[in-house]
Image (cartoon, rainbow, N blue to C red; front, side, top):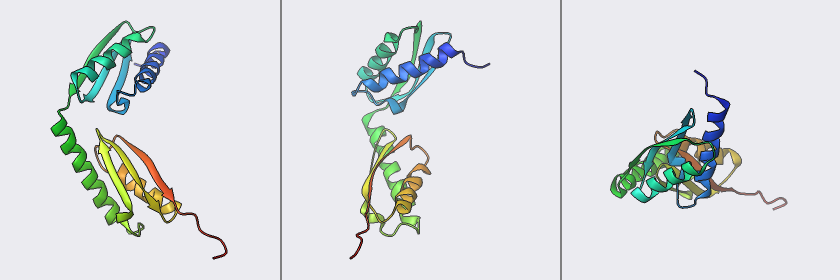
Length: 155
């Protein structure tokens, strides 16, 4: 059965509300609506974060109820998962023959959100690095902070 226009609007508005709070990490929370009842699914790092997400969802006009299915991810399991992501991404980057010097790129992760910085020799190399990260299972989103070298003309 197709979602109603109201449910799609509620999903969009709840996501926007969650993004407004810098305390939350909205990429780790999925939002679903059905007949005005919003369901929050995902993993968060604390009970306070879990409750804050629920409270913010209730603020959206038209929400008649909230099913809070957010689970608590302990800092140890979260850190271990993030370490695994970083290791796997670095392995993917190192295995890509189109990337000249993989050591130029720095990778960090937090709750599946990956941050990549460094200096690429070309736009193609930048794209290769980003694609390598996106291929790793468990990556929720990639924050591209890679700079591309600008060729010096006339040197």
